[in-house]
Image 1 (spheres, rainbow, N blue to C red):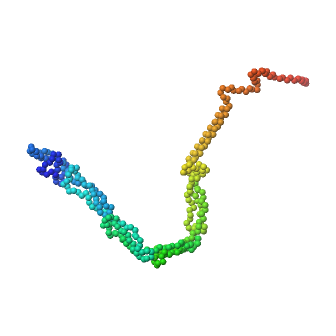
Image 2 (cartoon, rainbow, N blue to C red):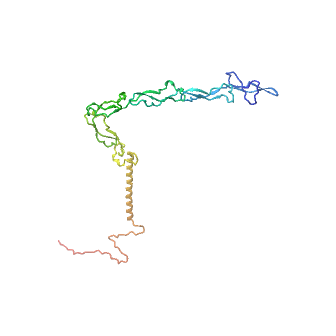
Image 3 (cartoon, rainbow, N blue to C red):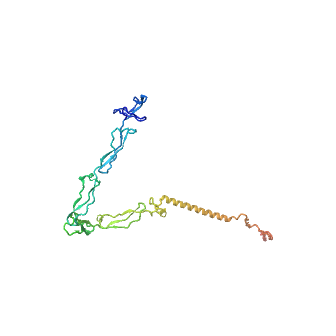
Length: 351
């Protein structure tokens, strides 16, 4: 700000301090005095009063995924005049932040220090904070790095034997051999010992008949499944007696009523032709056949007519009638035939 009595270069902005809360706007009642060699001169000038402040953006997210980090923001003066906010207290552009505790990395436990059947030993693992600074992890939740262990030997289980009840006789039992892989007492964990006995039920077999052909109307095929016992409950779960099948060989089967059109059932592609398409194909073949037949008849008639008419320029032979005499050139005329009269004597009969 220009102090009283100081010199102001020509064209430089003039700043003044006004009490807080002074209304913004333009004022022309100010008088700027300038000193020159000609003496004191008063020059009226216009003056705009504006509030100067810092324009602040929002804080950014914390730079650290966990633990301690920083946040930043941009700060700009509300005036476009260079140095206008120089006397204002600078606003912070960086601050510290904490994004919660970091997690602990816990790998799998190592092998037990004691072997199978040797009693209790220890297991260890490396526990580390996911941040380079261990203080950024919650020490109260740090997992254990060691623990006691006991390497139990494994159990050996045999195959289940036959059920004590035969087919359809109800619930029975079946057994198997279970033993520890070590001869040392308590070498195997008794809490994990497999069962040596269990309930069983010998179900009677199902008699499965051959599958039927594919039903083009439903797209399914079926078979008869008959329990060999007196009731189906004695045979257990019933096998499938119906399943879907491919209708690709059914021909026109939009409604399952056109199996007779099987020869037209494929259009050369992956899918069957529709019934409408097949009917149109048959109609087209019939029309083409009729046209070809008519064409052949017309051709035969034209050929027969052409043979009956003599070529142009030749005389048409005249066939003489029975009452005409044919006279050949340079031949002796033949006299016309005279009628022959046969006279017979007439007998008179007197009465």
